[in-house]
Image 1: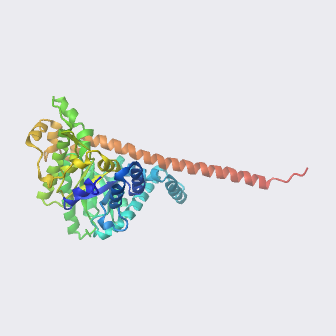
Image 2: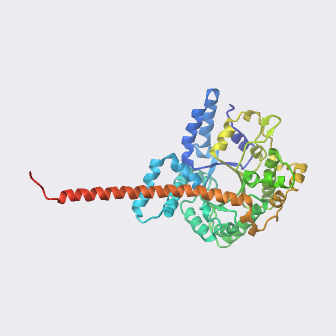
Image 3: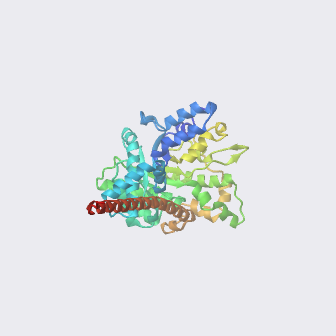
Length: 424
């Protein structure tokens, strides 16, 4: 194993690129232990050094990870990572608020996870002059079509710490909220975005909100904006292959990955050429395709030279660190400036699903909420959030049972104490 991994190589030839951890930072140490337990032989020492460089508590300015993306379902990973601790946190909250319900407890627990995560990355936030070290925390996905609820939750999340960046979905209602938050100087991450019109809409909405903030003299020293493109969710979850098949077009894995990259690259250059204040964020990354017998990672390779954020979940990072063909990949400089081949674009443009996604005005804001990838992602995120609500409900139930047992036991003791003594 080479000492420098692909993420480090990518950053070294891409000025301004940031790699973020797509999970709770509280699971990082256990994840490292699992990785090391599965490693062997000559890989052990290089891998150990790579992991130490990802999060450097002694010298955060030099660590690989420059920020974190998370949401309620990812925060549940932190809870599962140390169940006794979080059960005690839940007990403390219930003791303080005896009449709390499961939804309120869920939200309180989620905010506590965000707070502890923000604390971990605060040193980097301060060292970087408040431009890195953000914890991107998502509003409740079940409220992605409710502007009022999202705004209220966003303000609560932002109040936790100055390095909390609020994730807002790319729904019609979401862009209304992003403009209002930006005008208040609250950093945002536009998530659940799949098509070029959403990405452009967000960039222009942020610009509009930023102009309001400047007119009103809002402090912007701790403000940032990133716009997420959920790449494989557009290609795979949204059903690009299926939409193509309906009109008699077969797409290879390579063509699906290129379709996703075409949208990302077009959005990236649009933001750059129009001097827009947001930064593109790439997520939902996948290995592939297979090219001439070698497994590639085009989602990484095609972004060399890009001034962007890439957020990577633990599973994907492990795949990149350990996949067999990793040493065969040579990163070429400035691939972000190389357009997707014309013949591929022409083929893709015959598919209405892609054609609308690739056109600057392909969707109106009113249409975002009904895009297949958004509908499916919102459903998945909402169902995952319910799992954290279930944990809150279990904590409430356990506390209620414990209280009932104590009351019953205490009543029995009192009864024995008050009973007259009987002598035989």
